[in-house]
Length: 486
Ligand code: CS2
Image (cartoon, rainbow, N blue to C red):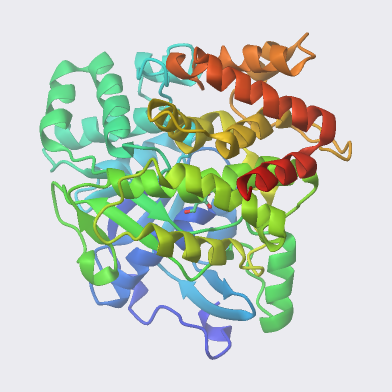
């Protein structure tokens, strides 16, 4: 691949044969390849060759097959409107497919050269019950891993098996960085790992608790799924067929709690922000960027918008996003260095980046896992402060309406959500907005009791769901934004 690369494309200029394996990444999707892997690539490019990545796919063979065929190399296209910058990334040395060879994953985690583990396993990959904060007892994979770790199935299971092997071999502990969009992701991951370890070996549990580090992180970069059209367009332009190509925006942010238990690259020099408190960064990003994303995905998806930039190109779309931001921003305590006015302005420009073609359907996936931190938490904060929350309520009602599996034009789609069956069951027999809201609010894995039991919340959700049911998303959004500008 490198030999035939057109000029002008940044490529690894370090000796790839000398790169060591310093990082194991669980969940090697497009996001990792355009975010953390790009940072480790910069570490390698700076001459620190300790930070090659072993990627692990917990399910499918796709990324492994694609990357193996290209010696681990892939193109990262950074698109900003009409401008494109291309970089070939060489940081990923290999990809393991966990179900094919779980022992290889455990061995990688136990490798003495490995000091960092990063994870993008999505919200559902932590296998934690939101209501109790415990491992999901009714999950078959969790149950299997709690019994036997010979061939783990879950991310916490693999981590515990790997740490057990490290400890048995007298190797140093690991710093394990959750890079998923969850508040307090470090402590959540730590809780999942410790619960899994406790079920197997109390001494291992104590060793992990005392010596491993689980820093909280906030990760931010918009990385839409690569489409066959992206691959074809790049091939037409360069004659290179890159099935593992990723596309992204110029923006990249990684805020990491400064709590490591071993070696790390010079993260500050690589643009990573090290801090004592990630929470306010995380909260601002979850409520503003991700909250607006979810609102756009449901309301926009219902109204027939295929991609995010088309939604914000419309005045009503932008006004809905601004109304939601006005509500959510007031619930935040921004950290020093974060100006919310600038942040919102920059965010709108990022959403408007037409070259990304970020699909609303992609963002709509796994809503049950995303709603609590993105939309429910700011509503709760506004209720405590006695403030209105119509934009946020419309967004949650949009998610409720989405569960019909049918958009406003009658087009049908599948609900992609780990709780899809539960959602369908809950809604069976409900016809009115009131019945649907009551049925969905009863799911405590999504809605905490103080939210579900708040009559004002129930009333606003019924109001907006009824509007969405009767008149469609476009009219409901116009109604919301007309009120806002009153
Ligand atoms: C999106 C995120 O799909 C989604 O839920 O909101 O993937 C979003 O693009 C990233 O968090 C941006 O950093």
